[in-house]
Amino acid sequence: MIHTQLGRTGLRVSRLALGTVNFGGRVEEPEAHDLLDHALDQGINLIDTANIYGWRVYKGHTEEVIGRWLAGQPARRDQVVVTTKVGDPMGEGPNDHGLSARNIVASCEASLRRLGTDWIDIYQMHHLDRTVGWDEVWQAMDLLVTQGKVRYVGSSNFAGWDIAAAQEAARARNSLGLVTEQCAYNLVTRHTELEVIPAARAYGLGLYAWSPLHGGLLSGVLGKMATHSAVKSAQGRALEALDTQHDTIAAYEKLCADHGLDPAVVGMAWTLSRPGVTGVVIGPRTRRHIDGGIEALTTTLPPALLTELDTLFPPLGKGGPAPDAWLT
Image (cartoon, rainbow, N blue to C red; front, side, top):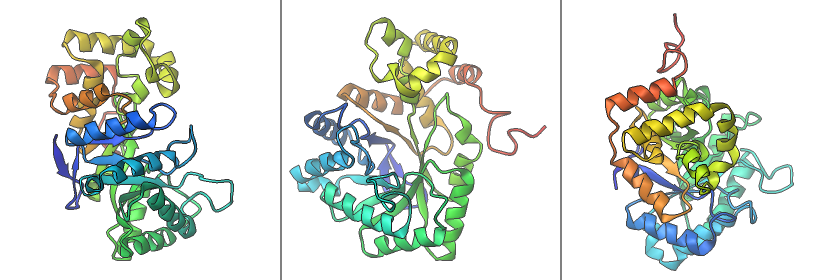
């Protein structure tokens, strides 16, 4: 497993993060524990979850699943970097969502109980809350860091200017601020290249791409559908995108076959190769999915293939960061 430094911090993390969004409803607890064991055995030390995950069973279920796994062998807690998220609604009350100081602190306490741990390594804001000022957000986050309940703070699904605003507000408080951004990024979804990646790089944030296969769209969906083996790739965002990108995906799968490469490996290897990308979050349902991610880590795509991928999935404008991407 390849480990790297997380942005400007001294924290070392695996370039593959084990995403747990499928734990509960798609992956039952015994299988989830097996996946966690396999990931740790392969050197994956970054476990990504959120307080809302497990909603197919009940909100918070996934954190409890991870907590029971950690409790099974207490030494595991020092071997892994646990990240969870705050912001999505966890109840019906008016203060059960968002990034108010009240909800940040209360949600952290609840996540700690479910995870059965004394600290969260990276506490991420799941989404921006435009109703709350940064002074309030950082007051709450700084309190949790001072108390030792949170080690680092991260963001998820932020725009580039939101990263900048958050960092400047943290700087004014002499706080470390954000250390990581987690965002959607893959061959199909490339808008991240315009503003988010440049902002993350400028402020020294590590960047993890979630959905590197666009919900399975880039995993060989057409071949799987032909053999009736498609599961996640035959639903959700993958199925929606397939309506408008069927011919492109067919050409993509043929291109991968011509190069003798698995489409899922190509999709992840491409994202991992992009400037500014620390790693990818995979959401495995089987050990094979984890092994495919590890294969992508060690796969170098030839320049000719990269050029062909840019032709099939062109970047926005001229490519690269804004504003150069659209200057005439």
